Amino acid sequence: MSTNVQIPNHQSSTAGPALATHRVRLRPVRDADLPFLYGLMTAPEAGARVRFAGATPSPAQVASSLWEDVLAQFIIATAAGQAIGLFVISSPNFRDGYAYFSVLGMPGATGRGTVAEGGMLGVHYAFSTWPFRKLYMEASETSYGAFGSGLGRLFAEEGRLRNHAYFDGRYQDLRILAVYRETWARLAPRYLRSNGHDAS
Image (cartoon, rainbow, N blue to C red; front, side, top):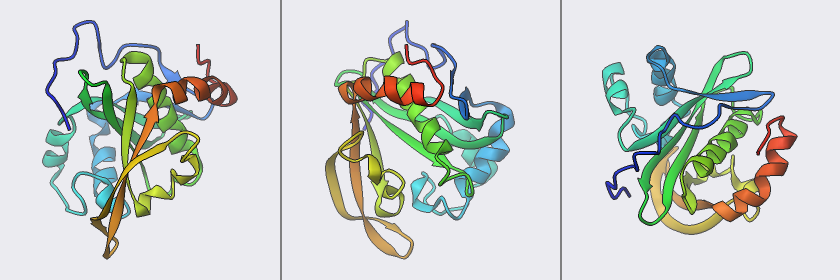
């Protein structure tokens, strides 16, 4: 996925304004977050949605893999500061203008809209910071339920790999979803304002 194109010197994964709504905020990953991230990556509910795909790596393995092919990543935290998820921008291709993103929430935090809200802030950050044309996300049938309502409005399905991912005891289709810059530019002001964030 990656082309190993060097990031332009004026770009920085920590540049730009802090991102927050009245319910959630994004902040950079810190060393103190490693216990939280280990729990997030090894939770049984995470399964095939994380790079370890059900394996139980050591804390050192999780720590050493955190920045592999990653451009930027943020802890998704509540307004009170509780970590509830992780947003990652990875595999950037600056020549062709795309990258991948992923959103992972702690068990118990999903279903409330806060993790998805953090994901939307991350998408806004990516489009505001780099000139990507589109951002890709891969979703199995199991994880697709959390994003399916956005298909056609926010996400476009660009491809589907049949029976590609083994999870929950069966092979599942893997959908390749994309958020286009022009789509986000149209939706962002209304979305961010409605959640207490200034999109300007």
